Image (cartoon, rainbow, N blue to C red; front, side):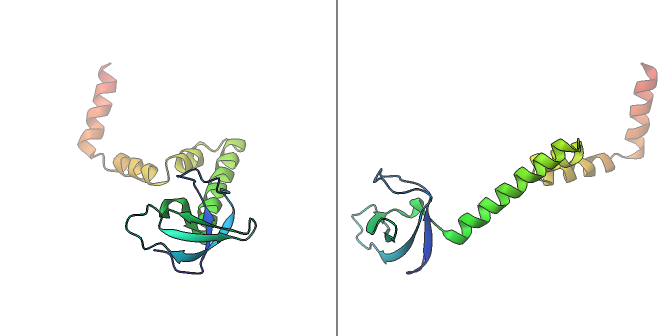
Length: 125
């Protein structure tokens, strides 16, 4: 639950209230009515209006900025990997970095007997 006075960013408009998605506002009150679908009352200074919104429509500004920075960083790494033809970096960024480590571990886990078996299979063909 968000605290009063926190700076928030509008990320959705679930009830189609013509909320300005992407603009900031301030949390000014909680809506404690159990019969109501709204969770917060927010104030948007640019519009000079208050809106009732559900919790899914708003996010802390710091969280939104962090997500945007991570997205831009990922796009920049992809562009760099493509421009330098760095296939390893490209696969690492596209797979999130974790799967490539798992692939390396699976390659390293091949026992000596399995390696000999693979060589013999290729030699047989």
